[in-house]
Amino acid sequence: MQMTLDEISILSVYSAMVVYAIAFIAFAIDLARRGAAVTAAADASARAEAKVAVGAAVGASAGRGGAAAAKADGGASVAYGRSPALRVGVAMTILAWALHLTATVLRGLAAGRVPWANMYEFALTGTLIITTVFLAVLLISKHDLRFLGTFVTGLVLVLLGVATINFYVSPIPLPPALQSVWLVIHVFVASASVGFFALGFALSVVQLLQARRESVVASAKAAKLTFLATLPSAATLENLAYRVNIIGFIMWTFTLMAGAIWAEKAWGRYWGWDTKEVWTFIIWVVYAGYIHARATRGWRGSRSAWLSIIGFSTVLFNFTVVNLFFKGLHAYSGL
Image (cartoon, rainbow, N blue to C red):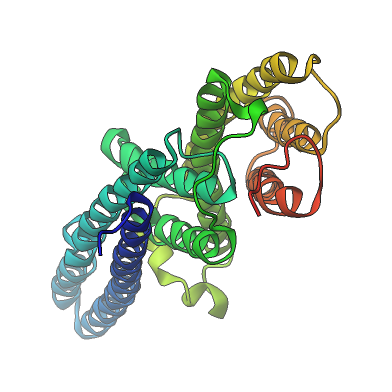
């Protein structure tokens, strides 16, 4: 029996999810190896300090020899970038992205239109863009951000799982209001901005963990997250999250304006206080507040990270709760 394009698309989605799961495991193994390497380096440093102490007790000349040994043992560094698990994680993410892209394109061909007219399709396209943004940042950033692979692949895997189980609908024709070129422009830019917001969210979560480790280095809780010692500082992570969120905010601003223009074309008014319109504006206000507070009010550190996390939470609320439980002109969940 010949499979339809939509059935092949679904098969590609499930295949992508399996590969994403493999990538997630590989990235998680790398984080575990980082933690083990930090622990081993700490043990080596402790042994070196013990040698210095013993050398100092038996004489000055022995002390100088002990110090040299300490430097040799404690100065060793682990080449985390050469981790086999890390390379496997990136390779599997690229393969999953290719399968994910295939599934999205086939869904569009099956529907005879762009594949983002309902919640299932938006989740399919949005998660693809999240992965695309992650891989693009890996390519162009001067910082090695592959450690975010655990967070990105985990998030994409969860969202795809929820979408395929709870949001799937067969391809259907577009409602009249969606039959516009603005569907391509408005929704694609919105999806791209969500991709940047998701990366900013991941960076902010790691920033909070790193800030806690830096402030309470000797605590038992900090010791459980030893892999953080191999990652950039909290200040560096904050700066990266800020830059990424600014790109997402610029795109979301365009999304808001394009939506108003589309609303005028479809319904004869730019703004009607529809639930979706209100939440799109709320998201804009939250991220505008985040950028303003950090740039002019000096809200740095944890306060900045929490604003970034709250911003992405409003994005998820807009996609899930607003689409499922609020009625209005933007009720395009397809369910």
